[in-house]
Image 1 (cartoon, rainbow, N blue to C red):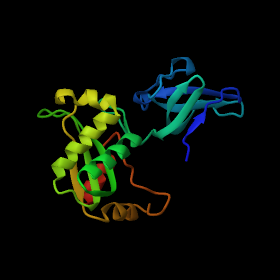
Image 2 (cartoon, rainbow, N blue to C red; image 1 turned 90 degrees about the vertical axis):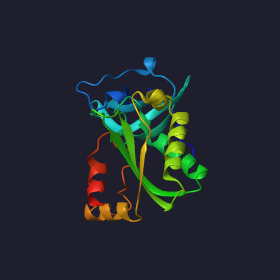
Image 3 (cartoon, rainbow, N blue to C red; image 1 turned 30 degrees about the vertical axis):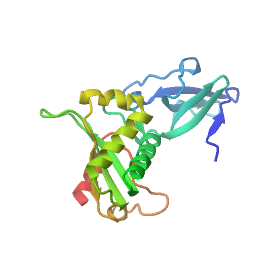
Image 4 (cartoon, helix red, strand yellow; image 1 turned 135 degrees about the horizontal axis):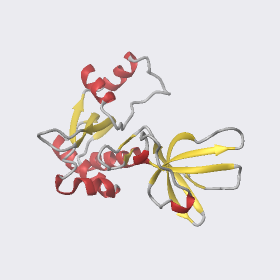
Length: 213
């Protein structure tokens, strides 16, 4: 299915683009079409003559062309990790998980990830809870391949991982089959419209799941 779409600007809509690192800040910065960049993730904000005023759609978009303007939906604004300026979105993590699974001969059913914050003893990291259908022979090898794949698809992540200055190696934990489903069931969220949030920019969800385990 084609995911790119041509971006029309003459349909009584006013578009603003919020860099994802601005999300959650008081008075977040937005930019117009004259300042957008190809490949960067933006939250889409719209105003219309029908009454919407600076409405945050919830989707993140990337520009694939500037002449003409073309965009693709890259994820959801709530499903990302940017605690250290790494700007990891679900599109990045899905691709990296697939690469790591392929290189370790494993099969991933589902996953969720969240930041591990700086402490007095260590720098930051990403913690991943992964439910495998087929486990890798070596979980550390899986973490290494995941890390390499994320570096390959996300230059911001690669920069933050340089010499472990901002981010150290990802922490990958394998969990038993059915944990995610049971967690959703106990929250009353089991069903086709409810899925495990794959990425979070805080630790609320991952700590709930770990406590449940």
